[in-house]
Image 1 (cartoon, rainbow, N blue to C red):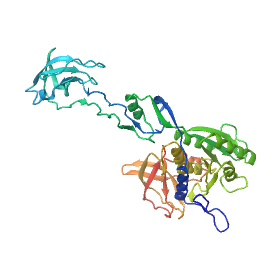
Image 2 (image 1 turned 120 degrees about the vertical axis):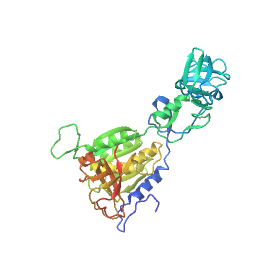
Image 3 (image 1 turned 30 degrees about the vertical axis):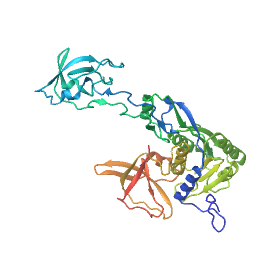
Length: 423
């Protein structure tokens, strides 16, 4: 048996995997994927993932510059200067913004200089206007001393030539792009933007924007999964609602595998006559299904597979279960194939909170408990938001969730829990 073979019991039925085993198997398979990069203009780089290290082609700043409006001086001329015993300096020149200074500052002299002005030759510091008194248009009093390098940013102090400006696999912020702009870099290598294909299955599912026929339910999952995917910075192709027939479902999954980088279908993952998810993945490419079912509540019937290096996830039809499986399995996969390596639950913010009611849990199963969070004078309180896995309102009411690990049989009231906050 290979590491990717499903675990089966004595009757040949596939056994449930632990969440940690399922994630480890998923990440192991993702490590074998090749990730493509592209070169884009710098101004389109916000939120993209750097595909290579970027090194500074020059010193920043390229010359010593003033960080204050004031006078460029020889610092030794200011030593001991006070309001009662000021030093006197001759104004022998002026630095113009955006121009190289002309002349040299010598002992007993100074140049007027603006913030950002290039420090003239001979000067090693800048005295702020606030620490001077103008005697006339040719002379100043210095009432406070300044040390060498005072109010000056030196050549290469921001970043030196050949130093690493941006590491590989970094999500680029506005400040990263500003740094690269300051270095004169106009194009950057980034990982290609991931495309996610979303398929909704089930003869009972109807478009959310149309009148609801008897016996139907509105398509909640497509809206939830689309926006969770957008939140990961990807493009989305929605393949709509597909009937529970081999002809329609199999062909749509195959099309999505060929056209996108990652495929999600909701419904079709539990064991039932109309649930064709496992068969569709097996037909769409190798190695096929890796996992069908995990020890997780909610989210037990999730399917994870790969079809010709395209990750394919069959998510439960219940919205809460689908969202939980997205967090645990889909989001880190998107981050991995986007170039951002991830090996944990990816939430940007966690807080410690006091659990305000006891919660039961079955040993051997990972439980995800949704909570609303309230801030009090004593800290944060976590109030469980209880509801069935089909209850989308429980997600809308929740601020986040905490995890009860597999060996634990519940938590008592007033336990401290780590809450993963929804953005």
